[in-house]
Length: 250
Image (cartoon, rainbow, N blue to C red; front, side, top):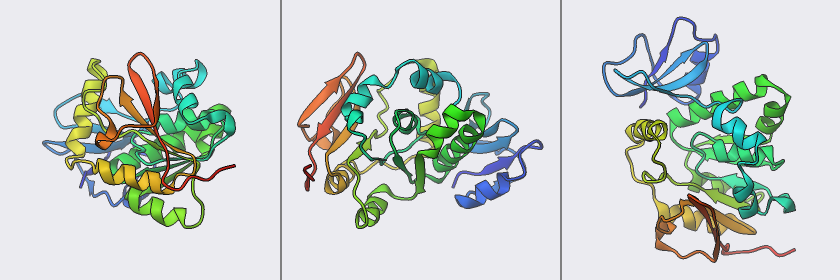
């Protein structure tokens, strides 16, 4: 379990945030490995002995650019956003694609099973809600569920199925910039177990009403070796679209 260090300037609710995701609090940074730290800037993922940090920030950086400069055009087409679909993001991660979809006006249910990653995402959504009206509006459209996506999707689908299930499984060869390499290295330190790609795709196809959208590197392999019905391809990324097992027609 990833340890959680509270810096002297950590906000008052930091202890509760750690407890919500079952993360053990520590009184000093550990001598090795990854850990979370809470300070006045929020919650960050750190690695002992290194200066780099990974923090969810929807109000600035890449997230702000994608939200304000049209960085979500291809994903918007892939989920058919003009039809105003409900979307379940089964591989929440740092929530960047969930936030792009929410910024397009869509209601997004996001699943994340790793407690440290879910804690980072929850903190980022809380700060987005307090940042400004634009980020607050988008953050309000995202509902975060902590736990196994396959299990949770099956349970929630008994009451209401989503139009679209979105998947972006971890893919180590996706990016090449130094910053993203460091981020992915930290994440691989957190998430040692391999993802059940076959089970994830099967669960998504079982609950989606309209389509399952899978984000992949442009030249990457198909998820679980399964050929999609069609795809939307960009310069470095493509979105593979699979048809659901039990489609619902208008």
